[in-house]
Length: 422
Image 1 (cartoon, rainbow, N blue to C red):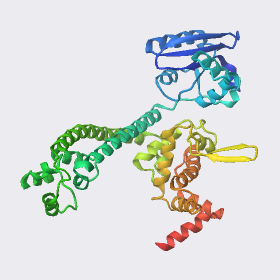
Image 2 (image 1 turned 60 degrees about the horizontal axis):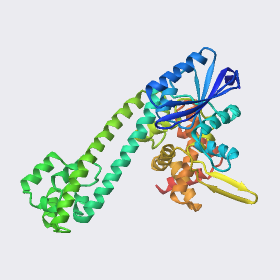
Image 3 (image 1 turned 60 degrees about the vertical axis):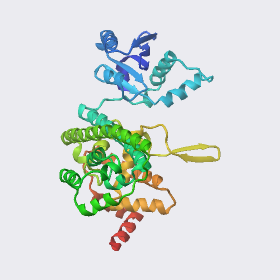
Image 4 (image 1 turned 120 degrees about the vertical axis):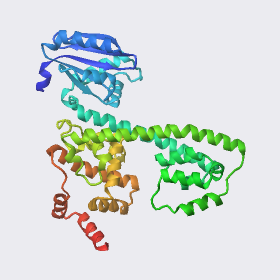
């Protein structure tokens, strides 16, 4: 292809935490060179400087690596003379097996095979282009926020199990544990005995500072007084109090960090030119719209068809055939966070979109389980998301419903029946 005519060298990189093994193929001479570069800003800067002096004025240098993020990619994507190819590790593994059936593996050999695989099959690989700073920021922050939410969930699960073992009433009185209100309540009264030993005035003062709407305070005070402790074992109470005091500060810090991430994500998303597209989808909301934007990115040439995103995200199933055998299974090699994003969006859209709810119900009636039905819905949503993203247009449900009616889709009848029941 035209872009490859300017490539002066191909470099395969097998990256690691401490060092990177590289295999350089010089197009003009046909010679290979093996290098080893330390993972440090100084070493990488020196290596890139040498490449620039050697090839930068004559054309491009193709660099092939396995990772789609990380410190090495962050360094390389800022160099204008480099053309990056990010390949699937599974593809390299299969390519290696063709030459090393014994399963033998080494980093220098992998670097050489990586460069050879793309160099000899350039039409089968697409050069990777970095998104703009706004999109990269959204991708990092939305994934980071999700990691914090997972940590908070793990802490609340641990706290729930702890409270069930000695103080189950707190689960009812404090409400959802992933709130600052619940943290304040448990920090003030880590045991039922501590709560019952507090005076009425102390409890009222707490609720004045932490008001809860629709709460019958007198009834709540009566419940406090009449409650019976699950255990009076001093050893259990002492241990449990210490654990609550250890878990609450961690949970409180995570909740504060999640709020800060939410604020920053909203700020960046508000300024992004693609914001109107993704916030137009029903059910996307403040949490999922930035994640959908980050999943697609800003490079409109990255995906040529919706099927590419369906496969890349892991939403599309894998079909395998061998002789008369035929089986379908879900895709394992995929970016899990992106798959989770589409799955959560599809599930949430059922509450806000009539045709999505009807489509999900049709899948359930066909015998699919919940997750399989949601994935089918996500598969359908990706087609619509892709079209709007590609054309830079917001989603308009009335247009899609007219298209369904024109195609005589069974969804139209299903939606009509649902409307009649209202």
